[in-house]
Every structure is written in structure tokens, then in C-alpha cells.
Amino acid sequence: MPLIDFDDLLIQADQLRDSARVDQAISAYQDIVQLATDDHETFFKARALHGAGVAAKESILDNNSSYYRDAMIFLTAAKELYRSLADQRMVGAVDRDMAICADYAADYPTALTYFQKAIATFERSDFFGELAITYDKIGRHFSKIGRLDEAKMFIDRALQIFKKEPTAGFFRATTLLDGAKVKFQLGRFEAALDQAKIALSWFQAEHPGKNYLRRQAELYGLISAIETELGENKAAIASYDRYRNLVKNFDPLAIKVVEQDLNGLAR
Image (cartoon, rainbow, N blue to C red; front, side, top):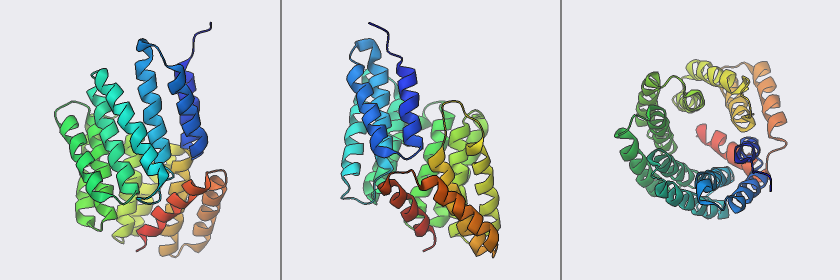
């Protein structure tokens, strides 16, 4: 029987997730879970359950979403497997992803509980990239509930911590995206545009095995909104066209999630 290339299967599933093809991604991750039956394959099983949870997050619209329920089930199972492997870094990462799922569902007390667990794990470690992205996501949590000064403070702290982990490119680019959203909410449109374009350049660069189409779409939508505020109407239309072209192959609910998030910034 030929050996199963779990790394390649995970890359394929990740590409579906990064393209916001949520249901296909979840199915691909579940196939990996079914294949990873041996004890030495436990990490791949955990990684697939983790990926399924993160993929399901992209279709969470509110607290009643079946995707919220499924995401938390997948992530809880992944966390138990990571614990069995004594992998504290990934346990903390799952806690952070559970918090992010709760934020998508507007289940803010649950989100804060899991963020506190993740911080407790990473503050006593040297996983600086994980710590930084966790502070970033706490910043987004506070921006969602209208506490923008605290949001900016946590995101600024994240960017400082990234100086200790210069290889955390994806996490840093994500933080720049989140920071641009907060600057937009604060009315600092030119600074928001600069930061969003830096983030976009990272996600558009070549990353073997990755496409980051969902992130690029989110950024073009944000950039279009910023350009509209700055009166750059021609550029705004061009950016919006790029956004629409990217989301056309996303799952319908995933499009609604992106649009709900972008619309929420203008309130």
C-alpha cells in the first residue's frame, strides 16, 4: 500500500480554505482525518481537524450558525489531540482560533475567555509570532465591540512583538490588515490605505502552496472603501472590481461573511 502524503493533502485542503471554498475544504480535511488512523499520524489528524474548524469559521454569520457549532466541535477535537502530543503551541493556537470563531458569531464573552487562555499559554513561551497574532486578534475583538482605542493599543503591541519573530510573515500581514481596519474606523484613511497596501503586497507575493485569495479579496474590499472616503472614485471602482472578481468563486455564505465584516467598519 503506497504511503499517504499527508503534507500534500493538507496543502490541497488549505488552498481550498484560503480560496473561501468552505464546504469543499471541510470535506477535504475530514478525508484526512479518516486516513490518519495510526498513532504516528496523530499530528496530521489534529492538523486536519484544526483546519476544518478554521475553514468553517469563514461561513459563520451569527451565534445561531451551524458553522459556528461545527467549528467549535472540530477545534475542540483538535485541541485534545494536540494535548495528547503535549504540543502547547498548537493548544494555544486552537484557543485563539476558538476565540476568533466566537467573535465571528458575536459571542463576545466566549471569545474573551478563549483569548485569555491563548495569552496565558503564549506569554510563558518564546512563540513570539503566536503571541503577536493573538494580541492582534484581541485588538480586532475590541474593535468589533466599539472600543477602538484598546483595539489600536493591542494591534500596536502585536506589531512590536513581531520584531522578535521576523519570519512570521503571514501573521504580520494579517495584523497589518486588521490594523488598517481599525485605522479606517478611526477615520485615519490615508494611514489605513498605506497599511492595507503593504498587507496586500505580501498576500499577492508568491508563496508556494498558498494562494490567500480570501485575504486578497478582503483587502480589495477594504481598499475600495478607503479610496471612496478619500474621494478617489476611479481607484475605488477599480479596487471594487478586483474584489468582485475574487469573490465570485467563494462559497455564498463566505461572501456574506466578508461583506458583513466590511460593512461593519463603516458604522
